[in-house]
Amino acid sequence: MRIEEKLYTLRYKKDDKSHLKILDGDKCLECEKEYGDPQPCISICPANVYTWQNNKIVIGYENCVECGACRIACPFENILWNYPKYGKGIALRYG
Amino acid sequence: MLEYDIVIVGAGPAGSAAALRASSSGKKVLVLERGPEPGSKNVSGAMVRKDYVTSVFGEGMPFERNVERIKLSLYNKDKPVNIEFSPENLVTTGRLKFDKWLSSVSENAGAMVIPKTTALKVNWDNGIAKSITTDRGEVSAKSFVLAEGVNSLLSMESKIKYDLKPENAVQTVKEVYSVKKEDINSMFNMKNESSGVAWRYIMTDPLVAGFLYTYKDSISVGIGSPINQLVERKIRPEKLLDDFMEKTGISDMVKGYSLREYSAKVIPEAGFPDINVSKSNVYLCGDALGLVDPLTFDGISPAIASGTIAGDAAVSNIDPATYKYELMKSSEISKIAKERKLEAEFMSGDKAKEYIEMVSSIFSDWASGNLFGIRNTMVNNYRNIIPDLMGFAIKMR
Ligand SMILES: Cc1cc2nc3c(=O)[nH]c(=O)nc-3n(C[C@H](O)[C@H](O)[C@H](O)COP(=O)(O)OP(=O)(O)OC[C@H]3O[C@@H](n4cnc5c(N)ncnc54)[C@H](O)[C@@H]3O)c2cc1C
Ligand code: SF4
Ligand code: SF4
Image (cartoon, rainbow over all chains, first blue to last red):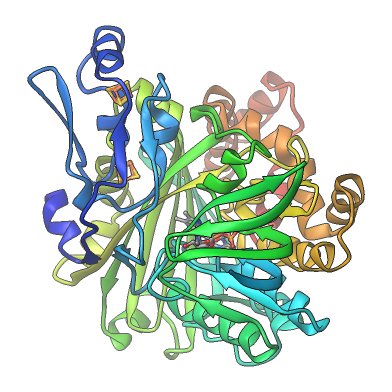
């Protein structure tokens, strides 16, 4: 089963603004040189939130399952990681 | 601005235990929870000790099945070595129901719980915390408990602790499959819907700690693996879960049943006693202190134990050294502190591999009557494996 299909099982309320942000795009380039493609944030994410397009990280924040791993995995501390606001984001039934 | 005696961030097991304790001693308590309801953001297996939870929160804990049997499978290459035993007092539970119940017990004791509210920042004045800014305004209090879980943004922003390193953090992914009650009973040979199993797995190369728990009408399965290992080898966590399910035969078991939920969460592997536990009138507890055993995934009991102590600490405003001492006095907490080094060694890859290869070769020699093989394995290994193995099995209880 593809990740996107797995993510369909989740109840989700989209926040208008992304709760995730890349601080410095140049660091991602440096990161790609050092670690290759896929970079750590891409390979650790269980929800396909990050993709590498035209030498830039693109964030599909609405897929995020709020696990926290990308923030810890990024070798450049380059992810500004916050929680979605006002109760938005995922809502688990089992947990 | 709203004013309270104590403001608690997070309505997980740690936060609700702190809220119960503080409101029971007559304080005006507010709990802030970012999820639409308590538990909706939280991930566990989950297997918990019912008697322990009851000793703090009273009767009425919602649970799925009693764990009648624990099976531990140690994989070396493709064939596992299995150890089975019957535990007492363990039950499986889902976090939404469980956390909602914990939170309602704290509300009954007088705590005010506000969901859908994210705490953003602790505001300090001269080294003393005065208030918390949330996405819905500011609340002030005399003391604060940060029971915010593994992604402890407020504790980090207040410089009470630093973030986890990839080598000290385990990435987990979990799936819940909808399976009919009767089918679960026959799959696991259970006499009725109140009996269930817990199955734990350890695999090496890459190192994976896995679990399968039976709920009433669903099966929960998941894995955890150190983040540094996943990143170094560029292993996708969801792929690791797929491979794990394939290898253990769980994929066949759940074939034809529908996936009900997919989730993921980091488990901390570092923290107490090596980090600050509080700063002035702000107290940390639970996963924010890293109080979870990364191999057995036992984190709910230590969260409750530390939350209870944090609730007391916030009431009487004790200093960091006293708070740390109080935490250390709890056996739920001190056992994690003591095992930290052993766990780190085990989780660091090579050791785990060495260890499991050793154990499984002993068991397979044992099973095939190859006593010479056992002697060889023992002689060739510097460690005394029997006590280690027993210790490991006991911890799984
Ligand atoms: C896959 C997996 C399986 C596990 N299995 C088991 C098991 O079988 N048995 C067991 O005992 N343990 C298990 N654990 C560990 C257990 O889940 C944790 O140790 C436990 O949940 C810690 O409790 P806590 O209250 O400290 O944190 P959490 O349960 O994470 O609660 C923190 C709460 O704070 C809220 N919050 C966080 N930040 C904010 C903010 N800024 N504003 C408002 N609210 C906020 C969150 O929404 C959450 O409700 C497992 C963990 C994982 C990941
Ligand atoms: S891991 Fe960090 S630095 Fe590397 S690409 Fe991802 S966000 Fe950028
Ligand atoms: S928090 Fe987890 S799910 Fe969200 S982007 Fe980071 S790794 Fe992906």
